[in-house]
Length: 573
Image (cartoon, rainbow, N blue to C red; front, side):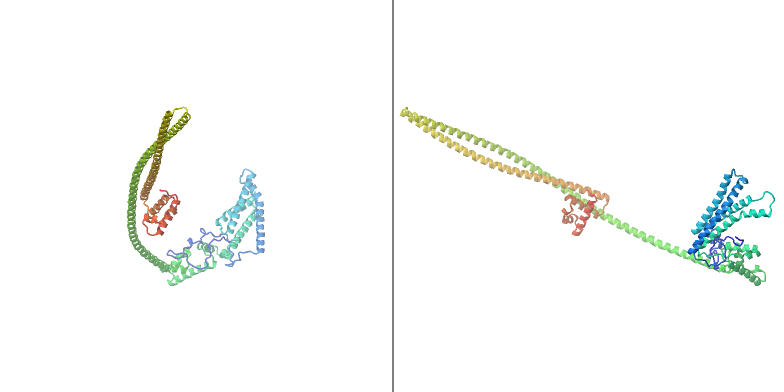
């Protein structure tokens, strides 16, 4: 690198002559732009070639890629050579002269310095390739490389007086490290040109100017860095304009520039801040315009604030009125729902009272039916006793008939015996016996006729007792039917009472939950479905219309459908 190849700042090219910002809204001053050295994220290692804005395309051909690969291999070889040459000298010098405890520690020191340089160079090149360069990392690399050069040169320094060849030998130790750093800077700049072809290049100051006017050139270089001017001709033109303007003021005021006004002296005062003559002379008008714009903006903000205040006030009043209307609407709705709920509650209480009265009546009827059943049971018992007595009389008549038959048989036997003894008995005895037998026969016939009459009487009594028993059985069956009906009526009354109690508790729960009328109606239909057996098809729409006092069957169907969905979610009163 020559003395003309100063490291560039990362300021973007500024080919136009727009001013750094004035206070009143003009572009920002140079010291606060991204063109300053301290705030720029751009490269600072870009070399100044003076080739202008024309750049080669970022995409490389195959030959160019092979060339780049060969350059990289050569650079790595150069780095290896430099490390090899400096390692032994630096390690030995560190052990002998720098008081490291052993040669091994000196070698570790040399390795640490070389590895640190390589790591920072690798990070610098990688970040440049990723378009995220780290500007300050180059300076530690330069510092460590300079330290390596010094250590290598010191390791070759003679012990006595220096001769010309000693200086040449000491300088030779630093050739390879300097050459390596130069190659790294070239590589970094090449990467920057490849990955960011659109970046404008910075003009370099001719080296002849540095030789002929080093102090003035250093001032120009300083102003170019401070003001972010990338063009050397532009910087020269600015200086020429300022000198020409100053000469014009001297001619105008005959050499006494102090007579010039403050506005006329602005170019000289603002030149240290990067303003051109035209920009400095335009500052008063721009500041007046900016002040007027600020006043207009303040007036506009004041009017906007007043308008917003009025709008906010109107919106607040409208919101208050809307809130009041909502409150009135809610109050009316709550009053209506409360009245409807009270009416429903009164209706439920009346239904519960009617159910209780019907239940009491059913209980009374059940008691009467039970008394009648007891009376029918007593009559049935008495009929059974009469039937048993008739059967006993019938058995007594049958026994009497059997005795008469036996007596008849005895009479027949006596007659046979009398006929057999007729031959030996006298006529008188025979007649007497015949008369006795005839009397006995008539007596037996009379007894038989009495027995037949008694049997017929017993049969009639039995039939009458059977008819009485059948009648009593019919009465008992009727009494049992009445009792069963009373039991059914009592069970129905209990069911109605339980339903009324459930309905009353459900109404109280709905009152506590403050449900809407439609929700109450849906729950009532759900309870009707449960009372009907749990199936919605068993509940006619007419019953829903009658209970809820709705005229439309479609509304009743909607209530029933919503009740089915409510029961499906697990609702139970």
